[in-house]
Length: 356
Image 1: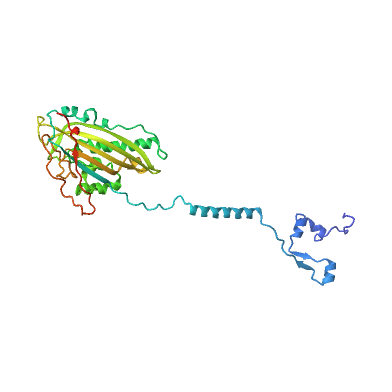
Image 2: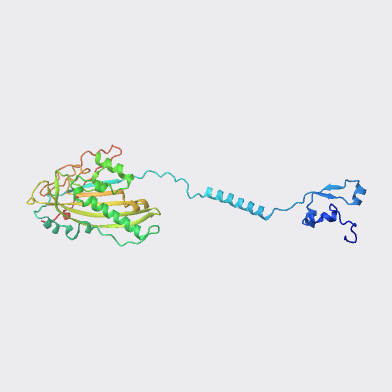
């Protein structure tokens, strides 16, 4: 049977009551109604204004959702970061560095005041000279106590001092270099920026303050003199200082004393002493320290006994036992020439010679 209000044959299948289960899942709550784009006028509004049954509602103005605000904020942060990195870009193209200054060198020959003293036994010469208490070979080049600087560590300072010492050993004590033929042992220690100047010095040596081989190393004219004793006496100092945040400077000031005799002469020939004082200024950046290479910026050399009349830029040509300096000053000095250094000559003090 049907309900109290139902027809005797039951609720029709198409009647509202019969099909309402189909729409029970649709809920027309208050938010749905308010969001509708069309709104029905009330009966009174339709009578008063003769308006149509419905009117279009104006869309409600809402603020931005939190997702939109977050997106806008992220875009603003990204844009600001891009501008900041453009102004302070850590990977900006490096400014082109100016070419490094070439090595500046001065080589001063020291002429003896009389005949050069000599003796058959080189040890006797050393014992009666100011070099009697000098160290022998590389042992005479001692490293000072070190400490870090503001921008360089202890190990970096030690590396700079050690590289400077190695250069002194190769350029002042290495027998093949002293004999006047070998230069590669010194060349390989230089900063690559100085190789052109080094090569030009040996290809076309000249006393212009830039291209004298004896400004780079110690070597004797092999036709004039040879070592009489390979125990070279050495004394001097090494000092490291920081010149700026990117550069260490090492100053080496050493005196080397060699016993020499005429080339080809036997051991019975008299030997004499030849003294070279080298004051070298080295500059090291971090690349030099990492590669264990040096940049030589100043070379100040005094050597004798030599004749001032002879050119000492390519080889040292020592005055040997019993010889005296030739009269006359340095040859080829032109005070009107530009680009060349004025030749200098000094006098070797009597006290610098052995008392034999």
